Image (cartoon, rainbow over all chains, first blue to last red; front, side, top):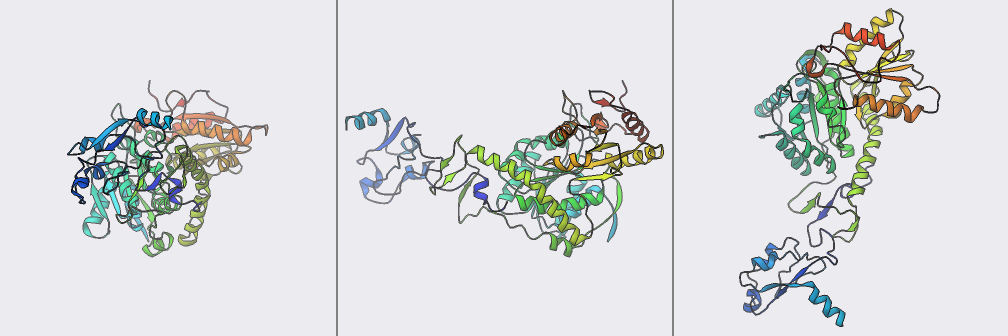
Length: 103
Length: 399
């Protein structure tokens, strides 16, 4: 006793992407950015980033263009819902797996 | 220093001496005078703590969970339906491994409404991963509160210090008030294994999966089952920590006893009465009376109820002809919970030895029904002549 630290006795993690584990294959849709509509891309300025702010999994980067870590993105669509210019579209994962199959 | 005070004040003095940082409680009879006294200590500046008034017991425990997560020594107290209202949060406290100490001033639970003493409240919270210690007098209340903080913080498991409502909470008794210096020597300031800090944000008690998984740091993180297994494993080893606490306490305060059980005239006894809390002291009177009649009987109080000191109990009851369990609570639909636990311990440790004592279960004092020493003596006398019934037998019932 006492040798096992608190993190190991409880469910405890540092805040960050992937806190809930890797998404695996169960995501139904993924966010795709249209850079012609995305405000930071259009203005080439570090602004807006509403998607980054709202992402509950913190998997969207605060960069130009914003990037999504698909390893952990759950496909919830909150970013698409919140984007003021509708620059994000949720695209069916089946479409990507078909493309991967072709490759 | 010897003082004369009631049981609730004994508990409050213990909490003050332990320098609890945060107290959150909602008043409920018969716990009220305990938290009233603590609020007075905080208000007068006699105690440097944050007293957080809350609108319910559920919130009281939520505040203690938050405070303990942030590294504060947290205390609360409740009774009966207040404890039941905490049910969801107290399980969170044990799962989150927070060393909160809570006094449960035992009282009957509704319905029907009743504010008097029995132990159904804490017994109904037996299986939730808290340590439960029962006290039989005021000295034990104050000493147990002090030991409880030490044990809880050592093992990161919360503790209920249980004592009978009115019989202990509202009666006055002389007891030794430990000195602040001695308590400080016994109980160092709380150093949490982990404390929430805005500079290093973290997620506590996040969702776990059925299986283990890689965490953000890339380390293999336990699943729910591993975390729950560790709670069980470390609750069992808490028995050793309790012995260590008792030894340390005896060294500093000059008093101490068996950390798990409190036997009285048991050594040469053929029959042993067993109970939790103040009933065991009343039983001592019956034992003395029956000894004069030549009946070899003793009484054993169970102080540590969870984790259950099964080996110590079975060892103490080895070679006895009968074990007579007096309980102020029961597992409705079967029998007293302590009787079941005792049978389990006896079977576990004595099965195959050829001698298993019979276990007779008496239910009494439910909802504060008066426990007459005459009735108690008569029940004990009858049981020493053989098991009365396979079903729990009720004493003082007026049907």
